Length: 244
Image (cartoon, rainbow, N blue to C red; front, side, top):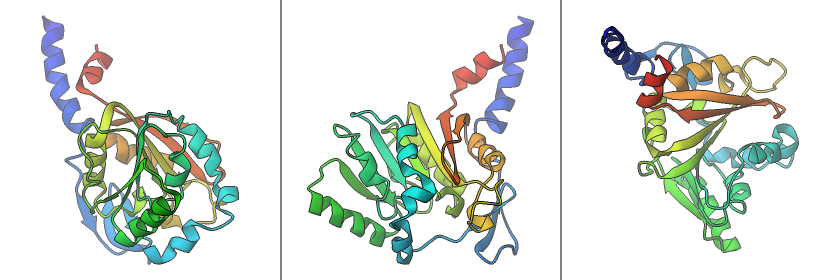
């Protein structure tokens, strides 16, 4: 009986501070010249790269610099998987995932219609039927609840103007056993030739994503410049069992 009472007292505290990030607010102050002056959990949000940078996304040496082939292998894509690429840009990763999810669907989500138009042109040219473009917004990825098995975000999370709201939307769209693949340039590594504000440390990423109700399962270290962090959704039952 005493154990049950103690459990009831502890669980509400966990559900607020560890399962959701509703208590964290945005702050505003001057910072990096490449930032927007808006901060979340001690990190300044970076400026979004516009569609004018599409050439950089499709650069010929990207595979050598980032080893995208390893990233795709890390995802262990199955033929029936439904996958969402958030901040899909030109579709660089989308068109590498689609052949593996041949009986599933790849959702290319972006807030810039120009990026999605570029993807749609490639879809038509190649007569593909398992890629669908989705116009998201700054607070939502515009996908239904429990609709995808895997979500991929490559070098985009640090640019979200509303990371709290976006992660909430992402969590909503993931199936109960779904996986979130967060790919960010390593903030701990000064050798990575990317501006500091466009990099993230594992510690900071874990802090922000876990505050939204995820658990870091693994950070695969086989990419030259980037973290490959795999997060899974927490649920209330697992939180309760972990304290028993």
